[in-house]
Amino acid sequence: MDDLQQRPRVVVDTCVLLRAMCDSVYPEHRTSQSAISFNALSMARREHALCFSTATLEEASYILGTSWCGSRDGPMRPEARQQFVGRYIEPYILMVEPQPVARQCRDAKDQMFVEAAMGAGAAYVISADRDLLVLEREGACRFVRPETFNCEMSERLRQQQAAAKRRACALTV
Image (cartoon, rainbow, N blue to C red; front, side, top):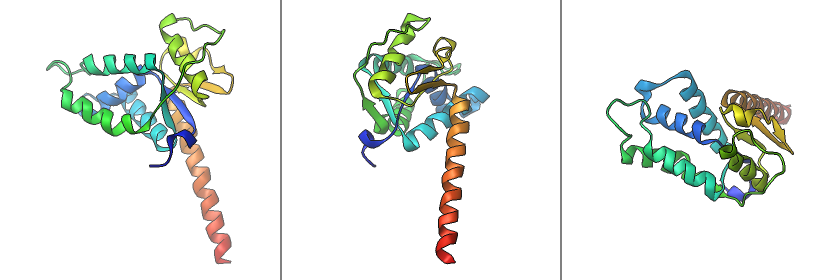
């Protein structure tokens, strides 16, 4: 894997991580939101470093470790959770120092995501939380829903593929 330090950076809200994990581990409980969140996480890890501060990583670890994901059988099996985290999150984690900002989030518990994003120099915060999304932008960082991120990354991929095709055609002429 390439150096995470060189990748563009993104912060993924815990709610999106939880929905993605539920989609991956319990496909029988799949919802449109869990599928969209899983796709956003998959697209993010493909080209971005997943940035966490100590506070955001602790929250994610706690929430992912105690959630039921719609299962009527109780909490998620630890081995299933660890497999998901080991495959989709851990290899792409870049720890960052949070950077305090003057602008305050409506929900004080969400401020840690804003500060992690500023400390990371993140291009995006991917969230379904209205208290974060209302911020829209802080510096160069955009606060977007998972479906917005998916659309933007898909369009970017299409543009890259079209450019590669044009280059290949130019070489054959």
